[in-house]
Amino acid sequence: MFRRDVLKTALLGAAAIATAPGASPDTALAAESAPPLDALSDELDHQLFGDDGLARPIPTQPTISDLAKGLDRTLVLGGGGEYYVAWYCGFFHGLYDHGLDMAALPEMVVGTSAGSYMGSSLTSGHFLRLRSQFEFFGHFPQLFARMAPLSSPNASQRRALKLSAAAKDGELATLRTIGHAALAADNRLNGDGVSRLAAFLTGDSRTDWPVAKMWTSAIDCYTGERLLVGQKAARKNGIPLAHGAAASSSLPGTIGPTLLGQRYAMDGGICSNAAHIDVVAGSKRTLLITITDGLTPPFLTGVPHPIADNVRQVEATGTKVLWIKADPPTEISLVDPKQIAPALHAGYDRAKTEADKIKQFWA
Image 1: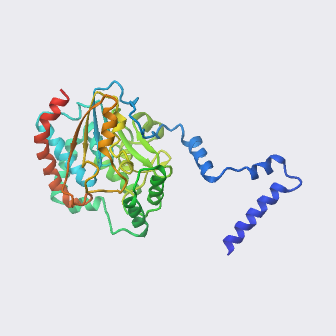
Image 2 (image 1 turned 180 degrees about the vertical axis):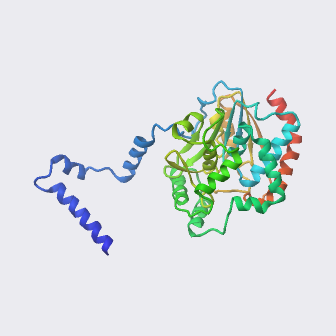
Image 3 (image 1 turned 30 degrees about the vertical axis):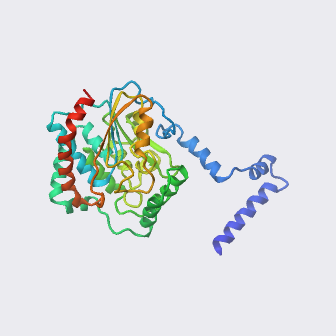
């Protein structure tokens, strides 16, 4: 009752001021014509965040990306939890053993979630260290579980997880609903814990964005917009590479969210263009690596991932795409550290069959 009485008093007071004989016409007019809150929110987003260089809409039609136009080789790495980081480690190690230096070949790398960690370590020269660490964690998965503790979800986490799982589309309104639940989730792996884990996985890049060709994706929890972070925007907003990767991997109800500049962000895979392959449209040849075709489990969200449609849009701009899918067992958990060892082996073995294809494609 007290809160309601206070609000009533405040509203009556504001009305009295606006309509009092001595009140200025401008004040009264402002009270009558104040925009709805959603319109004001949109206006504030534009005023306060419009020039931070982070938001980049996802096109609905084939569009050449100004970031990739004129480039030859580009690399796009999708997400998929701890399993996929380990799979990537095995895969890129296998490619290296077959004479492919994947750190040097691509002119641009776009990473999402697990792909952001892989791309960051690869481009900043820390891949072999990361590969050795994951081999260690494959033997001692409980130690990785301590670094990335995932307890039984509480009520606020269950809300975020259930909303993400129940999503049927990638509309902005849907992403905002998931994002608001992500913001309100009391995750155990948050804040400094996420920063430490991200720095460990990206090569301790906690102060800068050292590589110009590395880009990470995320979704703004408040607006539902796609956020794309490259070196220029990162330095403008004070975003180190570790934070870019952490935000890209902030799964709603599990990890984060993570601050990018002044925007709290969630996992870049929570959208209808899960690998963000549109970012490299216009390059000559792109290698796309995703965990599945987007239609086959395991899933980390219910937001549809029509990756084949995304690929066709990029190909319509003239870009040639070689698409490799990890295709893990459908029943596994992508966030179970016990899957690290089998994922490492699966990735390494897969490299044996894909190395020659990549060599021919990027020759």
